[in-house]
Length: 242
Image 1: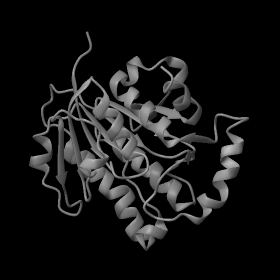
Image 2: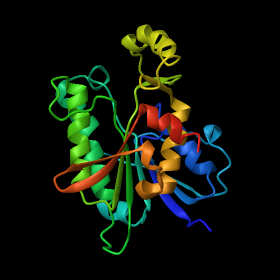
Image 3: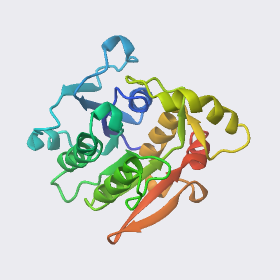
């Protein structure tokens, strides 16, 4: 018999987040789901939820931590992110891409020491806190910040190019490069992945947890004495088939 779970999804209106939310809502394992964000998914784009979805508009600049902790979430999915172009400046990008994520994860973490919580973050292939490229550096620093928070189980997804992604903002580079990435996926499983496959893989990871994920589909890394699970592009593709 499977244990029932509650889930909080952050960034559910984004390219990846919308698929995570849909997967979690359709899963029988998740009996209560929260969607918190600056904007929320319209009811017309939601599957039949049978009343298990709670939507709440929030201000990332002024989080009500007490209200967040009342949710008692078993699994926290974070798919928040942006680009420097969309943010308008490097400072704004780092605030949205990193500070918003870390503050939200901190707010969602329970104060109950007996409660076990799982955190799943959608990062990026190439994420590295020491990278010179701002985007990869921000993702790497965000990973480190999340790992250091003391969640019982932290799973980091590092997908490659997201194929078939519907984005709010136009990304010129992606429009040019995406056909090449799509062709490359015919010969390698490390470059690209369809966004719906990422969503499915992330939902499965949320249900299984690090211990339940097959050993060949994960890598265990350590930061600041905290161990966490990393799932790359090739591994996410295989995890989605379980």
